[in-house]
Every structure is written in structure tokens, then in C-alpha cells.
Length: 193
Figure (spheres, rainbow, N blue to C red):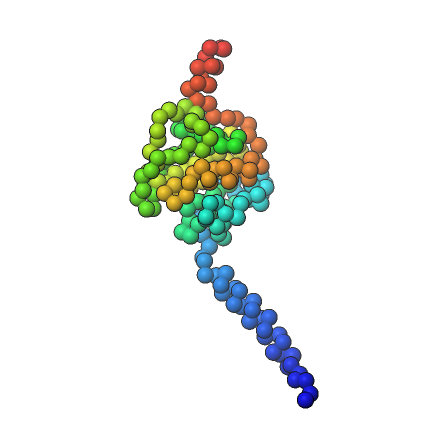
């Protein structure tokens, strides 16, 4: 029995069909719309973006719609923007995680309405004592790095300690020029001055 000869068109259709199916499957999760930061085109953001982890806890990275941005989770539990203005002196809470200082602002309740104790990423935050309550969503901005990196975090869905520890290596690609100071630091400065 002679061998069946495959028609050249059918050989081309199989790979084309596979590419079409892969494209359709990739399109199942839509891109996260994120407004870029004012200085998103700053070259210092590129090494940060290249060093971002593929996952934060159980949340996988997703495609975003703008430069120097990232998002994890579906729906997004963490959104990152590189190129925001570096915060100046502030009385807002500041924590240091693996050498990266973060200024923390509470935005509101989490998506699931949970209120849980806020995790302490690396010991007691600068200038803070006692337990803090986590009402859900936070904006965290790197302190002393220019450009700064901003995170929008839903702590009801993902641990802030996990997020900050996982992102520290990437954010450290922008050198620190200043650090947060707390009450203990101010007392030391006053005694020496």
C-alpha cells in the first residue's frame, strides 16, 4: 500500500491553528488598566521592571496597559507603578523591609471587608508603637529613592509582608539616597546636636 502524501496546505494549517488557539487562550485574562506614573519613562525603572517576580504569594503577574507598571492577582491584589515622585519628609508610617523604606498610607477597607492586624514586615515600624489595624487597602511608596515605586495593595487578599519582601530585590535596583527616621532617631539627633 503506498504511503499517503500530505497536502502542503494541511501542513501549514496545523501550526497556524495551534497559534490561533494559543492566542485565544492568552486573551482570556484581560490586561490590567493602570495609569502610568509621571516619570514612567525614567531609565531607572527598567532594571526594576526586569527584576520583578512572576508571583507574589499565590498571585501571578498579569499584563498591564502602560509602561513601568505591573499587577499581580486576578482580580489584582497588588499594582505597582515605577516613576512616581519620591515622598518628602512625612509623619506617615514608614517600614523598612530588606533595606527598602516604604511610606504607608491607608486608603480604605479591603475588597472582602476584612479587618485584620497589620503584619510587621521587619520588626517595629519607624516611629510606630503598638498594634496597628489593617482595614484593607494601602498605598505604599518607596522613600529615599528617585524615581519612587508605588504599590497599591489589598492586604485583605495578600500579606503585605510577603509583597514587600518579594519586591525588595527589584526595588533595590534604584539606589537609596535617604532613609526614614523614627522617634528614636530624632532623640539621637537632638542629643548629638
